[in-house]
Image (tube, rainbow, N blue to C red):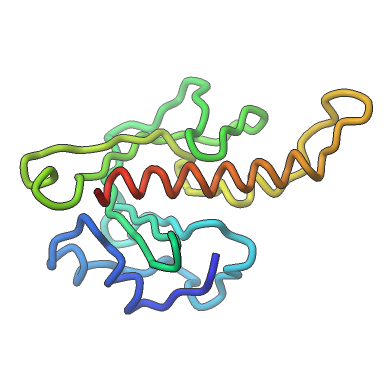
Length: 161
């Protein structure tokens, strides 16, 4: 992901009210984030733990959305819709985003099951286990990274309209 600053993050939020934009709190350690190691910026607001944000670059434009965390974490073995991890026992959480524009004002929302702490970028960069003799683990990892980027961008496009 290309680096992004606070002003661009606030401007990127497609489904946020002015109040939500002004209330946004950056993730702890924002200044130390290594943007070369992430595919999207996702975090839970430290001041409002049920609110979360996801931002990434789509076609050279920063696109972000505000999410609301469902009351309970999914405890059953659920798979993250973004990183599609099946080997780690990460908590998976249901997040819901109000659609941007008129659809959102009518109450339309989009839900997603994703890693509760948005650790997908770290997960897809781990070498997968050897599936069979001759399995190209490096290529598999690269494909997982591309799929993660596609899944996040697709979700943000759906919310942003």
